[in-house]
Length: 103
Length: 218
Image 1 (cartoon, helix red, strand yellow):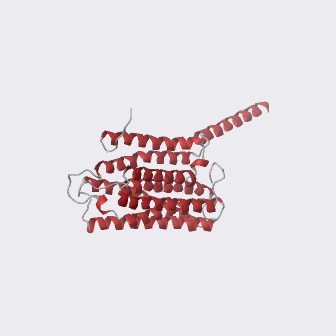
Image 2: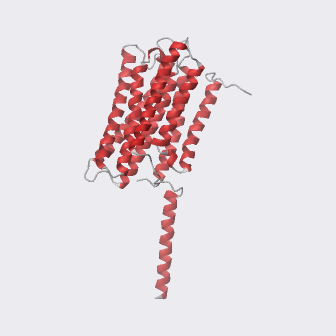
Image 3: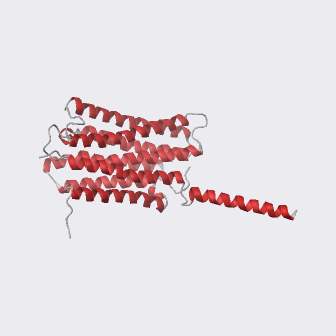
């Protein structure tokens, strides 16, 4: 069905990945309540963004099979993501929503 | 006789060239063009959703407007369950894809329907959430810029999910016909799957940035 025939995960592995995604989501929700109780501030934001990024990479890599595809597809997808992320970070920084330090 | 051989060779050569050109036209990258097109489309969607998420971030905690802000009334337990449902629909989608690659038509039908059903549950949850925000909390599209940005972002995501559900049910309908999904429909399933997983990853970002990280004006 596909032009490429790399070894994709088995159904059992897909279930394990789903379980991992569910656990990560549970940790995210737990972090939300922990932050409400202990006011972690920036640390909470960093942890939540990292957890979301991890879930993002898992779905793209294993469920969308990007890690088994040709590099051209990865470049296409990554270019769009990085372009959008960079563009809107600059916009949000210019508007004062995101503070970029350094230099 | 010799002349006809030359003509035959020339014709064969022209045919071979045409085949090569045809091949180059459609798969010069070694990747099916429909698949490449879908990945390019999904890549461009980051700019679309990025604009809507940035718009929300700009107004989500900007004070000075009347009415409730979205972050005042989020129901995190409810949205967490919705997120879990959408996440699990990615599992059923990939299981449908896997079943088809093994030639298991029954499994493909079952998992396709399960994916569409989970998508419909997610959409039902979103309709319930919107209804509650509007009728109970009186937060409408025009209450304040934060509310507008919230409805615009989550609404457009909901539209994407709805389009996905329609495509899934179409494939499910085709899979119920005699012989099930064919080889060419297999690629269609793969493309719909890519779209569906993309909708899921966009929600992963929205759930974190919009629901878990945003706070109303102090």
